[in-house]
Length: 158
View 1 (cartoon, helix red, strand yellow):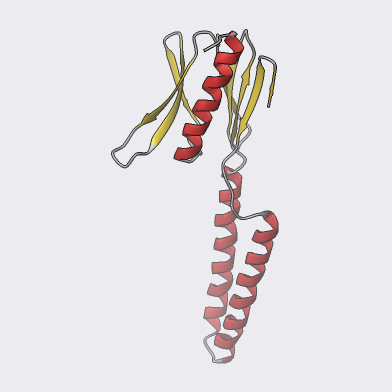
View 2: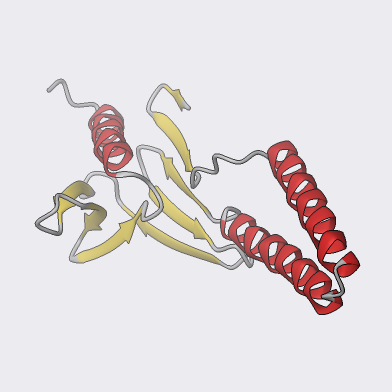
């Protein structure tokens, strides 16, 4: 979101499974596990029924843990006087990096031979890595967008 020389960006990790999709998936897994568990129970292998229930519980727990990490996000607030990068952990803990936008530089660096990138914000001798949950293409696009917003906030005509 940009207005004049002010800009606000919010970065979220991508989650392809919606809450409704999660409900459907867990219902199907539960149904299949219950039916197969009943078959084993009727064949006399009753302990297998409990292990199918344990499988469903572990799958549920793994997805809930994954959704918890999806609550992580970062905000970038830019005004002509201040650039603030705030990282919000899934637990709610906040970490902020503030600097003068005139000195701020955004870099999308290639870290590994396979082409993986990292996004860095540096100013006045300090640097912070951010956007770790973004894809490489999203990092490159966001680096371009933030660089453009920085140029606009400085009032440059480049």
